[in-house]
Image (cartoon, rainbow, N blue to C red; front, side, top):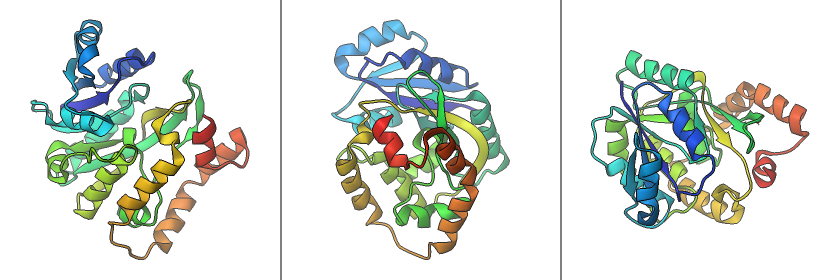
Length: 259
């Protein structure tokens, strides 16, 4: 089973080598780096086993579109930041779920939060009941994580491309369109990726992110959410307890803010 992994990078991440090594550990993974044209040759020399492409437009999501559009016959696709990590065992579990259910268009798993040195900070809360994803997203909650979600390429192609007019919420928009269009999702109870919190992340621009999130969520149909919200909170109690134990009574926004 072959997997396309896309990483948009400016070429200056000191953690890109660790990201590339984590992708290389996943059997069947083909890693595509998308970068500014000025650094493409340098990155191609540093990572000769990877496909390195010059971005086709400005911004993160235009770069990811370059990776989506690149030729290749990989059956599955995901994307990961240039300082995050994939977990080979969790990725294998996700791909096995695909193999067991041919109707699935997307599989998502658990994502650990780590600091700049790789030390565990906690875990992102995720909805373990996939039918709850759409009502939760429509209610303004984020019930799955970008680096922990894998798409069948045929399903991703039907969703379309990333919206390059978005700067911060392109992942949410892609997930929202997939859910709205009825792409079948499934949860796998395994650590699939690690997401690094540190200063300077785009996701820390809270006001701009909130505006883009409102734009995406406002286009979704609203429905009953009480049961989905209750399950989400109940199923993530261990995640919340760990956050309190490690950091006190702080919100996810606070963790993002302070790293």
